[in-house]
Image: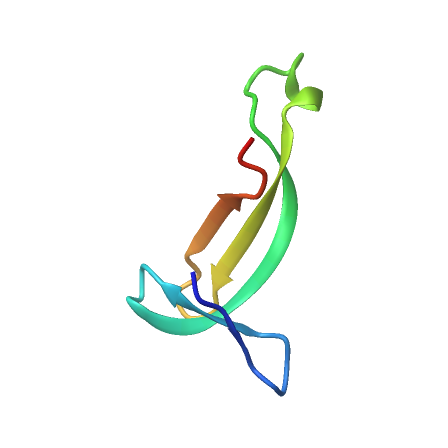
Length: 67
């Protein structure tokens, strides 16, 4: 995953699999719950890198700690 930052702002350029070209993306880190069971939800939160394409809105989530 190649990432390029514009010098004039914080927009990241990444390859979008939906657009099939390099497009601006908004990138964030989110803590997501992986368990569907409510009694285990508090123990199943993991950090994910979330990139949203600025052209088509496609969202890609990548788990950050692959332990």
